[in-house]
Structures are given as structure tokens and as C-alpha cells.
Length: 546
Ligand SMILES: Cc1cc2nc3c(=O)[nH]c(=O)nc-3n(C[C@H](O)[C@H](O)[C@H](O)COP(=O)(O)OP(=O)(O)OC[C@H]3O[C@@H](n4cnc5c(N)ncnc54)[C@H](O)[C@@H]3O)c2cc1C
Image (tube, rainbow, N blue to C red; front, top):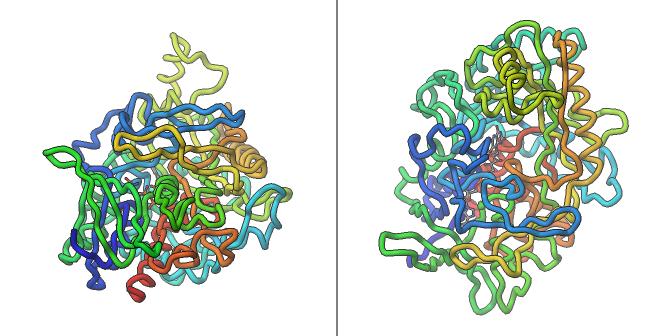
């Protein structure tokens, strides 16, 4: 194979940006993606098999057969799980990664999210830490992500919490009847609200059309390409330079090292009409952007005589601190219709409770939700005392599908070093590569914060005039799933982190991790804009260094 300047593993939120910045800087790169480049029709609109409701399967990978993981429950019982099962902690595996089917909420973290240990102290048993730099360091890169990919939002209350120098490039999505009800409720409570920032073209932008307000946003592909992800923004830019070779259907098996133990390239399996081939490509730099679980897996699987416990794992940090978000949610029956079927559906949020809640470490954001297909509503949103079948259930669905008001939101995860990714000693995938083994839970302080946020959700719905209010809240579970992060955290001390502030693995000059794995903490917000901002920052550094 050719010698590249850099090989990037993964084309998701981070990998696409790294490819774009390096290719536009004139670097020759190989971009590997294990999944396929899915068309709109490939993603489809199956309401029971999609990345948000994956009862019988899903629509953005990985394939259900041949890609297991092992999940270890809190009692120590392990079992093999398929990609569409909740304990798999899946995101997506296709060109664009999670951004192909995500909801596209585009939040900045707040300044306090970067200094959690300083602000709150370190709860016993947790690995809570500060980021190696403050919010202000990332601020220009948030702005760059917002403008280069295209975020719709309004410069108001949340912008005061996460200060910005420039407004959003696109106006926010218009309010719906649920926005009006929740605005009234927030006013009664004295809470401030803002529109939800979204990576969605509310007007034509960057040569793509505007949103047509269809009901299928989260879990699906956009019919007009108005939802911005790596696949329709930064990857086409990378390819247009002529400097980027993209290979889909190519799963990195291991990062190769030379006889002195220095990183020299990547071996991968690639599908072809003749079957599956194993190939090795050489490069000056390797950048791992495979998502928090698979990036850790790849480093841990890259063992050699020089690195018997995997790459970057000298201090047993790779794979630790797996975090995502507990997502408390509340529902209430509104006296009037609050559903108009106009997508995306998520329109209003409050960031009143992201910090400074008495007795709570952190907190979270609350927002209304994306439009739910009726089956998703049935799965997710029914009152606990309602039968799940029969006439009473049908009657409730008929009467209330358009009247139930929802709020939900991500709660700041307090990381636990025992919530982790290792590689399973026995189970292998269809290529023979040892699979990820997931174990542990989040820290109990996360559950306390989630309970607090669940109660605030109920408050909001009651103040918004709901007659009956109910809620659900996760217990002490492993946190990861679609917001997975933290497994190769950045830091100054190699004993407590995997990379430096640029994503460079401490023990290797030419090996970088750039994706959600870097997050020291995961904020009380959906994480993707932070992953993108970090990717722009690291990619610029890599381009300067290469
Ligand atoms: C349904 C859904 C809704 C979501 N909604 C939101 C939202 O509204 N807001 C938000 O902030 N976030 C949302 N997310 C989460 C968001 O998509 C992720 O945070 C983000 O994509 C993570 O970026 P990443 O670069 O870390 O990894 P990914 O985007 O997961 O990219 C990793 C890529 O690497 C590839 N890969 C993995 N292993 C290998 C290998 N060995 N060889 C080759 N390729 C490999 C994968 O196939 C994948 O394409 C959502 C996700 C989903 C699925």
C-alpha cells in the first residue's frame, strides 16, 4: 500500500472533520470507515428498526450478525449482546457515524463543564477531573463548527452561560404549540428558556436545501439533506481536494508498530466482491476516531512485544471512565393539543439547572423532544399505570398522542474509572477481532443529579398546565450509548489520562485519538458540537505538526 501522511480510522463527527482539515492542508490521507455510505433509501423509515428505536434491528449499522459485544451487568454476569440491544451501547457504523442519523442538537458545553473537579471537588470513588484547558480555549472552534457545518439557533439566554463572540449562522426552528405551552410554564416558574440549537439548515446554507419540517429527524436520514453531518459537509470537502482516499467497508483491526515500537500504519479488513482482504497501509501519523467504545477497543487490540497491554495503555487508562448521559424524562397531559406534527419537534430548552444546584454535582439541560412516531410514543411515553395493550391503551393513544407534553435532557455524568471498555478474552467478531467488553456503572452522584432533574421536569410540566404528570429516571447503570465518551481522556498527567490536550497519545509522537473518547467530562448537554470543536482544534494542530 501507499505511504500516507495520515490514516484516520472512522468517519463520524470527529473523523470527518480531521479528514477535511488535513486534506485541505494538502496532506495525503487514507480515511477508513467500517460501515457503508448509506443512501437516504438505505436508511429508510422503518419505525421499529432505526437508531432511536431499535426493537428488531436498526438502520445505520453495524450489522446485527457478526458484530457482538460482551456486557457485564452490575452483579458481574456477562452475556454477548447484539448491536440493536440496549446493553450494546451502540451509536452508529456508517459513513458519517452518528451524524448520519442523529437528532443534531448542537450545544456548547458551559465554562463550568470544563472545571468540574475545581468547582465541586472529587466525589469519593469518582474520577471527576478538570479539562486541560478552559472553555475559552475551545470557544473559537465551537464558532468554527457552527459556521462551517451550519447551526440554527438564537443568541439569547444560553449564550450568556456559554459566551459567544459570533451569533449562529442560521435562525432557530420556529416555535410550535408545545413551545408556547412550555414558555408559559417557564415564565410562571421564573425560568429562562432558549430555542434548541440544531445542526439543521433552517434556510438554504452551504449549497444544501432548507428543512422541510418532516417528522423523521432523529434516527433517520434527512430527505432534503438539510440536517448537517460529516457525510454531507466535511467529508465531501475532503474528497474534493483529491488528497483523501476513502475506503468504506474497511474495519481497522490493529495499529501497526515498527521494530522499535513506533506507530507505522494500520491493518484493516476490507470487503470486496471477491471476499474480505486484509491490508496494511503505512503512514506518518495515525488518528483514531472510531467513537469512544471502538477507539478504546482498537488501542487495546493493538498489542505487540513493545506494547503488551495495547497502545497508550501503559498506565491502564485506555477504556476507563466510559460515560454518556443519564436522560431523565417527564410527561404530562396538556388540556389542549400540543402536537402539530411539524418536525424536528425539539424547540425549547432551559439551562437553569446545569450548575449551582444545592447538594448536586453538576446538573443538566431540559428540552422538549423530537417528533415521535406513535410506536416510539407507545414505547417511551405512557403513564406507568396504563395497561400496555387492550382497549384502555388504544383509547389513551387516540386521546393523548397529540396532548402529551414531554421534556427530557442529558445529565452531567460523574465519571467512574470502573465504568469501562476492555477487550473480551473469548468473543470475537466476524473478522476474528476480539470484541469490546463493557462493565461497571456511572457514579452514584450522577443518579442523584438525574433524580433532581426528573423532578424539575415534572415542575415544568405542572407549571405548563398539565393535568396529569409522570416521569421515568434511570438507576445506577453503565452510562454510554449514543453519547458515549471519555475512554481516552485528555490530561496533563499520563498516570490519569491517555492523551495530551491535542489528543496525542502520551507515549507516542505520531498517534492521536480525536473523538468523544477525549472528553474528560461530558457536560450536561448533548456532546456532538464539543466533539466537533475539539476535532477542529486537534486537526489544526496535527496539520501544523505533520
Ligand atoms: C439516533 C442518534 C441521535 C443522536 N442525537 C444527537 C444529538 O441530537 N446531539 C448530539 O450532540 N449527539 C447526538 N447523537 C450522538 C452523536 O451522534 C455522537 O456523539 C457523535 O457522532 C460521536 O462522534 P464520534 O466522532 O466520537 O464517533 P462516531 O460519530 O460514532 O464515529 C465513529 C466512526 O468510526 C467508525 N468505526 C468504528 N470502529 C472502526 C474501525 N475499527 N475501523 C473503521 N471504522 C470504525 C464507525 O463506524 C463510525 O462511523 C446521536 C446519535 C444517534 C445514533
